[in-house]
Image 1: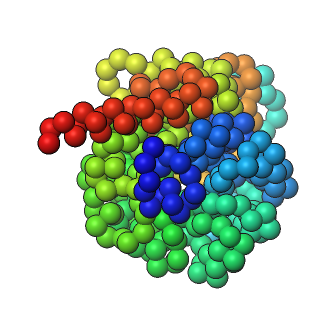
Image 2: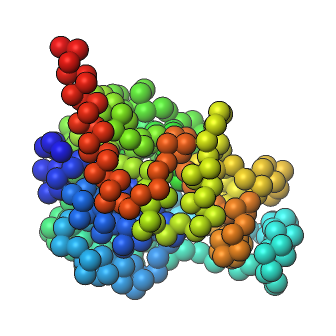
Length: 360
């Protein structure tokens, strides 16, 4: 497409990153297709046990020889204490009717996710080309360990202050997540509810604050959004919702259908803690609406509480009980092979930039 500081840093042709779609939608096949199209594919490893993460990395390497990205959640603070017996019972009672609806018996187990340190060890051992972290940072020692293995290291920020902290920790690029973005909020240095800044306001502030390449993430679905981000000073873009309906996406059929049906007026998304206990933007459905009046446990216990429910709902095609992360521009989603979508994004961006050049 054109060279930027991001394409030079990551050794890619187009300054486009597939957002790490953790929890199912992201697959090695999707990542490989994006890589083969000249952009940067990714693995969202936040929920994967260490050996499952290693397996996905090696599977992706078998599908492409091009650079790729692996992302992990690095929660800024220790996980909260398990809920009390009373809190757990109340939360389980709330989800029980929904579990019954999809044929689940028994009670959910409020387990914790894989240890971040164990996941990070795999990333270092596998010498992944690019590593990114969300919902926190990593120490300078960790950054240096990754760099010694040849990895480029990025962090995710939702405010200028967070971007500065990431750069101080040694990050070589910063992904700027605006309020329009789908999925979990990456905020780690302030209240997530108070770090909801739109791209037009947030991106120029971060670009003016840090000296490393900045990647725009949130509400970008086509060449118009890419050109706008570049005009605001970004060195590249990260798109997640745009790839959800691609053929290689691991999103369930009900999820893909809901993404493609999100048309018409109004905002089809909501910021909710209903599924995981962390603030995230998702398509509004029956469960997000019901959860506004129900007890919600902190992450990761709410995530564990709803895990079996979400899996069973996906198999049953029950979109009302799925966690369908999506950004506010979801109405622009397209169903394509991922390689074709990357090609369309590149062509659209070139067309927009050529049209703008005529004004001069």
